Length: 115
Image 1: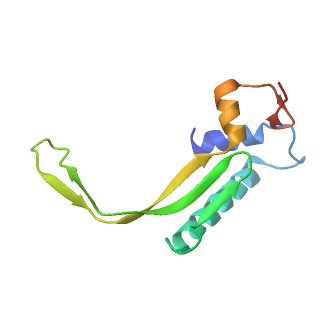
Image 2: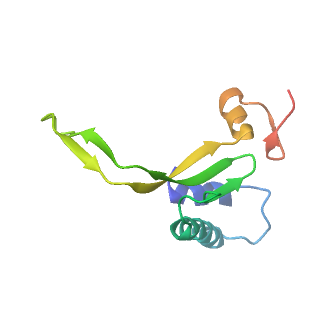
């Protein structure tokens, strides 16, 4: 899904307040992703609690540190390359999202309905 498709899908929802334009929705989505990006950029890796963003029912994003590692050169000459340590973000889907993806239950008010 592209950014434009996300904006169009959100704009087509019937449960949003009246008068909310596509431009307004685009600004809200842009601000949301900017804030998430800024949070993960500023957050330090390591320590007692890792930088994480949790959205109940959807999942958890966690900033992690990948150690230095050696990998084979993708050009196929058999040599090894060293990839330096770097920060990355992992995603773990929430239980509700897992159920929706795997079982497709009926949805009621944006949540999974009882089976």
